[in-house]
Image (tube, rainbow, N blue to C red):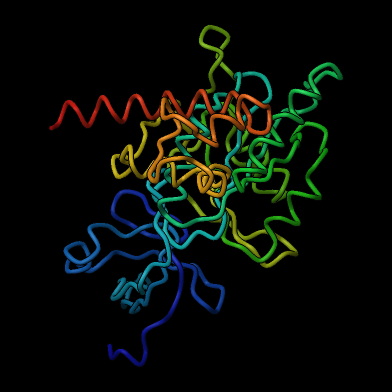
Length: 303
């Protein structure tokens, strides 16, 4: 089949060496990939824009992959516009260190981020200032936060507006309700959900592979992905690069006494002064120091 008759489409899921490709005409074709593509791209990813040839049995063959605008490491997906990091307000408890490491990974990939706190129907009035504090801290980091509930529907209109016209991915730990949110956003999809383990206060992995679904009435696509609990600081982030990956620190760093200040023990550090004066979030700064320490230890180990 000639190049002129190849069909254009997007990989919407892949499992066991087979890929579902949504073509421009709206048809989904089960495909395999040419062996040479693995040498060039290492793997075919959900989100890839591809060209396929049709086989006599109605299946397809992925012949080419267009250049990727972005690649996320976790979940492993291409051409994402927005990474929506989903945490639960409760059950399981949220982990802001995991969030900070995710933000580093997505900043490396050049992908916009937003934070979605699900299960906010469990938030008490006394806890609302706590959410407001987190909201302020991550807004300063360029990551807006939304309070939503897949249970009672609060915040879903704002969430739909954020996802409109974009290829977005739901990323975050197991048990936070990503599949429940997806079922709310795409009625009738009925993604498999799982309860949180009483023993571990964690969720069971209910999504087994990354898949892209079309959002109704908004022209966007949404990826559901397997959850996880641990994420190390990306290896590409060095102790010198780390301070440049905190947007709220970069501008202030111009007032530091030393160029390349790591905002730790250096004298006349404008960032540390802002933390001490309450102009920067103390919790995020403490996690920054923890990440800096881990990176420093890692670099010393591999000298």
